[in-house]
Length: 245
Image (cartoon, rainbow, N blue to C red; front, side, top):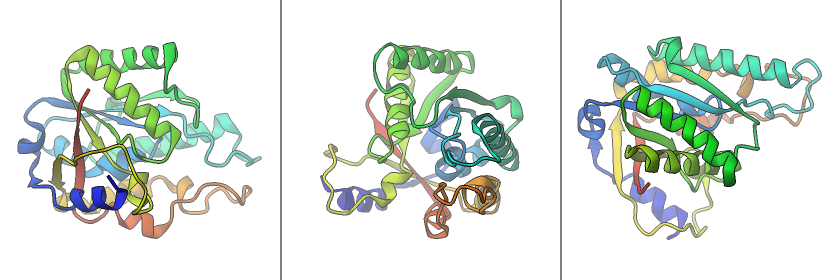
């Protein structure tokens, strides 16, 4: 189907509250990079915490390639900064620091196949089992970024190992060209009502200052989230798509 048709179908999915969408078991969220957890799942994190079911957030990559030519922020310092931002972000959503795990795969090089994928999927499965997670939520496989695709594949493999339910959330897939064909025949899932959490979700996204605020000014070609792109995630709903493990 065309990407534009898929995105339009997402906007027509039924609106649900947390209980109807996720039940009463814990959720494991796999974020390809630090900030994806806030963009795609900030409302989910906040509502789960409000209900006494704090999720586990696993951040797949170190995020250190957002400004690869910065002299002030070489890779190790960039990694530390992005982890600090992610910890601040989830704290604003109500999540204890013990519930965010950094898997530290190299940014832009998360394993998408082979033994390396199997190894990281096994780590994710262990997290899911240890925390009794009934659902794994990961990036949409049609997000046009190699790490987002890798996260989708890793989550699928982990769910095969554990029997957990698999849901996907779109991030960069939101701006696919409308006419682009994607390998998806139907769109199923739901929209989560997050209106009560818009304030803390915005604050969580803004905690990732390295990604939008010009904090790192010695790499003119470095990555920056556009304000218009951020606003797409502050509409009062989050989309979660049914995905077959």
